[in-house]
Length: 290
Image 1: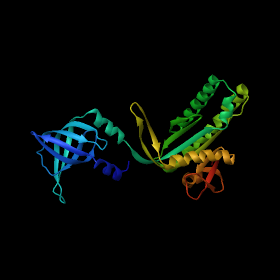
Image 2: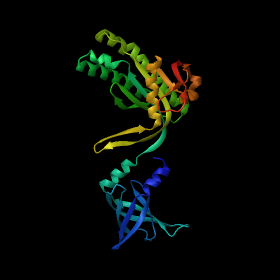
Image 3: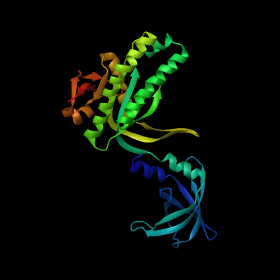
Image 4: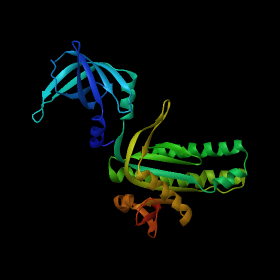
């Protein structure tokens, strides 16, 4: 969640706090694991202890206890800013903090999918399907980790991996190197293995894109996962699926190519229409490193 949206979200919270038997109201302007900041027309002495009821937009109430650590008078309004160090916080507040653990950042997103796996699976026993998938996922996960990435989500016979990007060219090349090695592992190990024991070919398609996403926790109760969401994720998935149409194995977006063009060998693909994107998009087939 970007800072502006975060602030607007927080300002929808109301607070009722009690000091020396008196009740006061205010608006929450910021919060963290250690404390919160409240805007109010009332003033409080530093180090005073107050009980707080934090009213959340969904109707839940968080009961807190804190100590006033900082009081700042606004130059533009008749309100005071009160910094409160929390002495006691409940599970509702802790869950609230977890739900706000959302960061917008640029990441490298890799999607991979087995070609024709549905047809292959129909010819195998269920135990063999699971065995082959686990063998494939194990080998791919090892490659992704070696190049600084992490598989974040498995989807049937495909998966999504994420690579943090701190230094554009170096970290983007890590994703490309991972894709090249994944293809090497498939062609040198998984493909011969599948042909020998299951009499079926084994190929994969890879799509790689670099873009802005929101990193956060989604789900409910104990069934939550930390993942990424955004148009960049959908675009990376669509790039991977274009491999089927073009008969290619490894495609990257123009965003990546512009940053690493001097380090890779590619074949430029004609401009193509991709679902969810206006206009035509230029993709590049990765042939290797220079």
